Structure formats: C-alpha cells, structure tokens
Length: 427
Image (cartoon, rainbow, N blue to C red; front, side, top):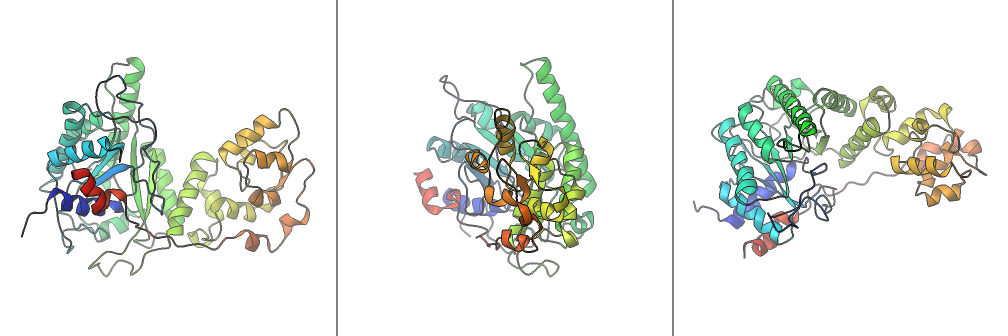
C-alpha cells in the first residue's frame, strides 16, 4: 500500500480530529512577535473567531498526530477495531504544517491530539516534542493546546505544561459504569488522578508567577475536558451534575459537550442515531447558568422533568416558567442576583441595568437600548410604565415563548480539512 503524502495525511487526520470539541483558546497569555522576535501571536483576530455552522471553532490547526490507536473505545471512530484509513504525522510534519498555516494567516494556533501508539508514554513524548520544537526551535508564540494521555508518566505531563497554553484530559462519559463498558482500556480512577495532579501543578505554577514574574509558565490557560452526549443513557441532568463535580474538584476552565455521532461498523451497544444537536446546546446553556448566573444544579434540574432539558425552551426560561411566583422582577429595584434570573438578561445586560438605573428609572425603551432581549423578558419584569399584568399567569405563555428546535449539520466541512486549503498550504 502506498504511503500517503502530507496532503492526504492532513485530510485524514484533520477529519479524524473533528470529534473533539474542546479546542477553544480562551485564557491564553498575551504574546506577540511585534518586537521582531519569534513567530505567532495569541492576540488579535483569528483565535476562536471562525466557526463551523454547528458553532465549533476552526481557527486553530486541529489535527491528530495519528489516528492509529491501541484502545478499542466503542464510541471512537479511531478505535483499533475500526475499519478506517489510517495515517500518521511525524513531529517535523506537524511543526511545518503549523508554521505554514500560521504564515498564511489561516490559523493562530495548534490543537493537537492523538490515538495511543505503542504506549501512553511514547504518544505523550511525541506530543511534547511537537510543542517543544515549536517553542524552542522556532520561537512560536501562538496558542498551543495539547490533549494529554492520563496514563502517561507525570514527568511527561509536566513537560507538556511548560510548552502548551492549555492541557486537557477527556473523561468522555458522565457515568463511570458506562465508561467501563464502552471504553474498557480506560481507567476512571487514573483519569481522575491525572486531572487532580494537573490541577495541583497548575496552581503551583500560578503561585510561582505571583512570587516571581520570571518563573516559568505552566499551562496558563488551565485544563479542560469533554463529555460525549448521547453515547449512553445518561440524562442531561446527570451529565450536568458530573460537570459540576469536575469544576469543583479539578478547577477546570471548561467542560465541553460533544453530541455523539454514529460511526462506521459501530458496536451494537451504541445508539443507532445521533441525539438532536439541541441537547448539546442546552447543556452549554445549563453549564453557563451554573458558572455565571448563580443557579444551583438542583434549581436547574427542577425545570428538567425526567432529567432531560426541554428542546423547545432554554433552561433559564424553563426555570422561570416553573417559578412564576418569583416574578415579575422590578428592573429598577431588584438585586443583581434576581436580575440574572430573568429570561433575556445576560450578565452584560444586567451590568448595564445596574449602572443605568443609578441615574433614572428605566423603561422598556431603555432596556432595548441596553440590548436586552425584550421579547423574552417582558412577561417577567416590571419597568417604568410597564407591568406584565395577566401575561405572566397565562396558560399559553410557555407555548408562545417556545421555539421549534432546528437540527443543524453536525459536521460541516472545516477549512483545515479541505483539500483545496491543504493544497494552498503545501504549495
């Protein structure tokens, strides 16, 4: 069989990487090469500014080092028993591709993962070599995110954190039982131990930087993980509770949610079809309610009968409809905590309301100017010259505010996987 060229490898390994959603680059330290030294930047347009139709960022060169894998995780298209075309990049090929893409202004950084080849340690060594070469040999100052191998030697994870902006370890499923059944080679305990060690090392690095600005950075953007939605029977609330536990125990920057996608020659224990993509979206909304809006998990769960979020209502609106006795909220007197619970009010809008009402009583027109979503908020608020009256108690309010869910295309073609783009980069 002919060995694929770099262009063919790029098509195969960029496509294989699309199933990993945790590729955002938020929180990276500010670096640039405006002083005439180095290559790349973590500032300006580029990072996380280009998205596929399903909302995923494509401004990073997102590839696998290889889609060969020793493991046989049932939900993974790259599992050892999968009948897919295999490819493998060398370290030098990944380094060259990253620099070539950057110099042509296609990307601002690298997201690099890999199947397990030979051993976890060997795979991790290869990933570290890529990051080290970019940083030390080419003075690359763009963003680097490495997917780490939990079974690898902690010393290798230590090296990875010295070169990468963010590290991630995917826990994949909310249920330990499901993970043991669908990914028998993975050890839940080892994954959690690795995440715990990584948290402690990141915190030590932050403390060292406070004491001395010359201390080396260690994964300054923290760590993240990913949950697959719909590969097992775990309901939305169980997935959210697992995420909250991970945030609390490991100080994660983000938990990403990725809708399960049926794969070729799938195991009989997997679902036959993909879940609606709206499930993934609702989980992100619920995640933000917990992280930024002051909701407890139990409050969010109370508006999810049967443990599943309503596809037609966002979780905040569902909670408000289930707790109408707490409304209407007077925008001119209510505390910030209650304003954040009003459907249609985001954190920035609430900050504007709190600032604006210091000088005058706010009307609906004022709220419109403050960029509030009046259509959602009206039944739940009082303002100068406005009260919802009987609207809040209407039996038809939920039906009127619900929007039909629209299924989007889960995997649209990403620019980095396009043969045309590949030819442009390689010319």
